[in-house]
Image 1 (cartoon, rainbow, N blue to C red):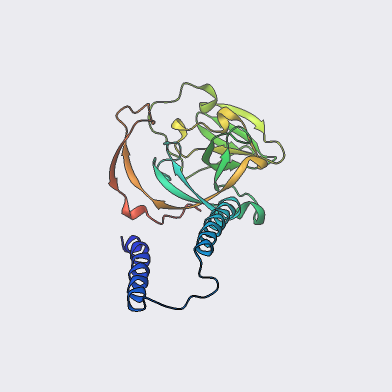
Image 2: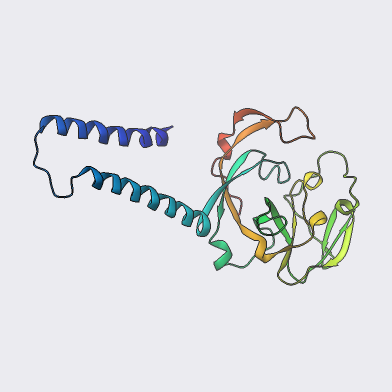
Length: 231
């Protein structure tokens, strides 16, 4: 609320101050640039520059996303807004355990958010929902298993399979409600979009139909989750 009031108060203050100055000095001498077309030109250039900067920030620095589904719950709750780091792709390697945003089916496809489990060259096997990496069981503290066991066989038993070069095996933390690499296969590095850094907005969602996440009712704000880091 304080930030919102600051955003509103500053332009209001400027407008009131300009009005009072103009009222005290009703017949000032004009500068050469004080013409109506100059103000219109400045406004147009400001709008174009603002849009260009916003596009550059979203493309190369960071971008905000809404996570609508329960595939990463409880790490990321449905409806939470997260900030995604786009610079990460160019400066760091992908690590096991990173929470990444990626294109689910190549360029232009929907964006998903899941956790990196398998790296290029790893052998992945899932037996009775237990994950084995290079024949050693991986104890993931973020994994939860809520609801009945899935009917899709690969979600319970998968592989063993070798992850191709420049590809990654991704899983949702909510293993029984996530459409991940068990169904869509390993994700190429070229489809990775960025890494999720923190939750900047959180509000509870209730689903009248537990099997349908497209219809929900808003609930209470989760103030304790604001700023929660995901890395």
